[in-house]
Image 1 (cartoon, rainbow, N blue to C red):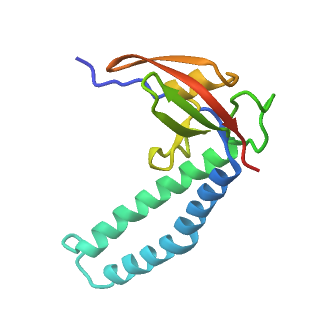
Image 2: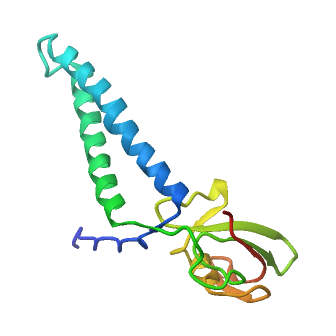
Length: 166
């Protein structure tokens, strides 16, 4: 049996202006703030002598590799992203960046924002445009019925409202 796993497909190259600012802030914090501090700590630990049993040195180097890896990813990803600040079409339909309110069959309402895969956060009510719900909502007008296959079985939702923040 092979251990090969095909690479994950890249997510959609879209991001909201807020999401781009957050990624740029993370890049700045890693490169200009955290990396110099860790480098200084590693240099001080290296000056202590034997590096083979020096935990500060070993873990500092590991953290530097993690920071460098994340910085490389962020730089490449930010170059590839397209910032979407306006709806792509009719404001009465769901497009990237919209806040949508959906209602389940039992009357439960939920409010979600359609964002890019780099900024989704369920705790903030943001879902990716690549998620099953995000794909099902895109392009739909108000009062549309949305059917999703979930692990618990098929679920039906009704699109109640669509809003765009300025």
